[in-house]
Each structure stands twice: as C-alpha cells, then as structure tokens.
Amino acid sequence: MIERVLVALAAFAICLPLTGAAIVLGTRAGLLDVPTAIKPHARPIPYTGGAPIAVVIIAASVLAAQFPLAVIGAGIWLVGFVDDLRSLPATVKLALEVLLLLVWTVIQPLTFPESIAAVGAGVVLMNAFNVIDGLDGLAAGCALAALAVLATLDGSPGLIAAAAAGAVGAFLAFNRHPARIFLGDEGSLVLGFFIWAIPLVAGQTLNMPSEALALALLWLFPLVNAAFVVVYRIKSDRPIMRGDRSHLYDFWQRRFGLTPTLIGCWSIAIVGAVSALLVRRL
Image (cartoon, rainbow, N blue to C red; front, side):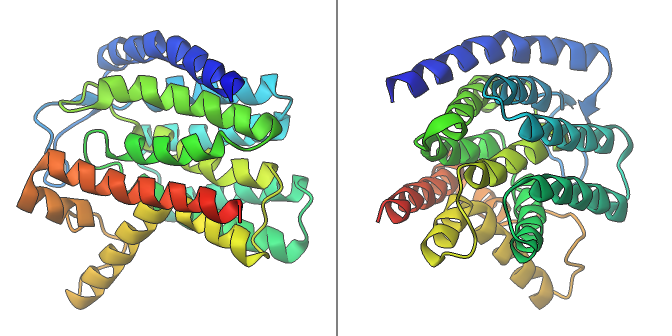
C-alpha cells in the first residue's frame, strides 16, 4: 500500500503544474467553456483539464506495460477533445466510443458475449459519468472515490489507478469552487474509460454476480443520477437525450446550495466505492 501512496503522490506532483499550464494554454488558445442557459458558471473557463490527467494516466499505463490500455485511452481522450472543439453529432461520438471499446475488449481475454456486455456497459457508464461533470468538483470527487478503491487492486491495475487518483487530486485543487478549469468531455470520457477498464485489466468479469455488483457500486452516483434524469424526463414528457438542468445534483443545488450538494453526491459515491471494496473481498 505504501507503494500506491507514493505513486499517487508522484502523480499529484506531476499533474499539479501540468494543470496550471493547461489553464494558461487553454485560456490563450480560446479553448473555453462559455456560459449558457444550461452552463451557469460566471465566466468562460478553459475546458482543458482532461489533458494533464490523460497524460499522467496514459504514461502510467505505458510504464506498467499496459500498452493497449494506453492506446485506447489516448483514443478516447482524442474523441472527447474533438467533441469539445467541434461538438460531434451524438451518433458519430457514440459510434467512435463503441469502436474503441470494441477494439479494446477484443484484445482482452473475454468471450464474445462478455465483450458485447463489456462494450455496452462501458458506453453507458462513460456517458453516465460524462453528464455528472456539471458542478465544480463533482465529477472529480466521484472519480477520486472510485479510483481510491481501484488502487487496492493487485499488480499494474492498482498502480495505474493510484496514478489516476493522484492526477485527479491535483486537478481537483483547481476545479474546486470557484473552478479555474473544467474536465471537458476529453477529461470526463477518459476518466470514465479508465474507471471502467482498470477492473477488467485486473481480471474482474461481468458474469460473476459479486464482481458485477462491485463494478456497478463503483458507479453508484453516476447511475443514480442517470436513473433520476431518465425517470424525470419521461414523467415530464421531455426528450431523454437533450441536455438541461434536470439532473439530481441540479435539483439539490437549487434547494440546498453547492456545498451541501457536493457533500451529498460525494457521500453517495464514497458509500458505493466502499461497498464495492467490501463486496469484492467477500
């Protein structure tokens, strides 16, 4: 465990100045998330926070000799970055995600049914994580809870998760309210990918109930939020896929304010992560 802590601290120390540089470069290059009706932040904020995180996690994957993981992770980051720049059509973005996840699962020692299930779960989970990046510190805090548990895995998967946790901690130092940088789709997708993929690298499967439950619990808050959104939009006769401020965390923020909302959302994520750890060890 000391080794994992040292890896996380090293990743934090590397990612901290990289994130500071990403703020400067993103601002100068005009890579800014401009406020809109569904993005109520006060001023344009650079959405380049995913790049330093991706650099650290991909480098950790290469050092751990997990080259397919590094290559597909880089591809996922690129899809998110292009989407941030150009707003890819939803069908194109989804097709690219499916293609990359399918390529990665084929490389893994999975049966064909397991590969299909893994791709379907990966697409759902990555996009469920993507949509919780709507409040300062929310997505990063939830990711940190999941990655801290994944860092307890044996071998290279645990080391990669520890590096990812350190990188996310460094990003969170700049993303806490008032945020100076956002993850962007590039960051939320790449984090979602690694949180989904690391357990599979470690040999976790979807065909054992306890392992499937542990994997689902790692995503507890994104899944709770996604379920809330779907039910609310169906009841309100609104398009399910159209962006708006009808997320669970949006309702809580309007009623309770930002800090209590973050505490509530992070608490759900932590309960899920700890429960996943306990289930995996039963």
